[in-house]
Image 1 (cartoon, rainbow, N blue to C red):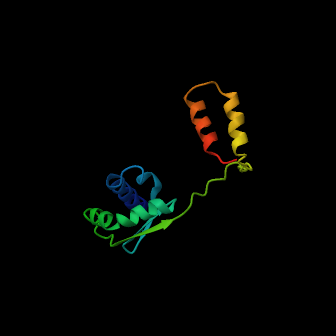
Image 2 (image 1 turned 60 degrees about the horizontal axis):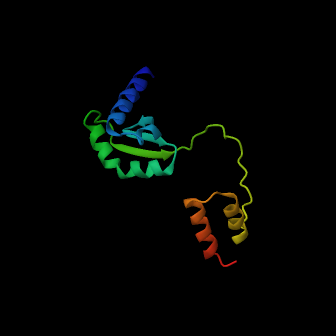
Image 3 (image 1 turned 90 degrees about the horizontal axis):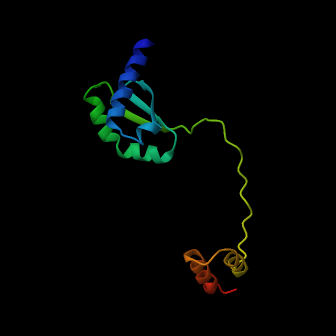
Length: 124
C-alpha cells in the first residue's frame, strides 16, 4: 500500500510538471491499474482539454514511468456541500417606463446620455 502511494505521489509530481495551472488544479490521479492511469477532474471542460492533451501526457509520463500504457479521464463533480440556495428574482422588463425612472434619478453625465439614447430606441 505504501509503495502504491509513493508511486502515485511521484506520478502526481510529474503530472504537475507537465500540466500547468489551471488544468493541474482541477486534475487528480485516482489510481493506476494494470498500466491504466486514471485521472479525475471536477468538470467536463477540464476533461475535454485533458482528452486533447492525452497523447502528449502519455508520451511525457512514459519517459519516467514506462508501465503507464493508457490514460483514462473521468469527470467526478466536486462533492462539496452545496451553498445556500439562490432564488432567481422574477425579472420583469418594464420597457420605456423603467428607463424613464432611471433617467430621472441619475445626474447628467455619460451614463444618463446612454440611458436616454436607449429610451429613445424603445418602441413603447
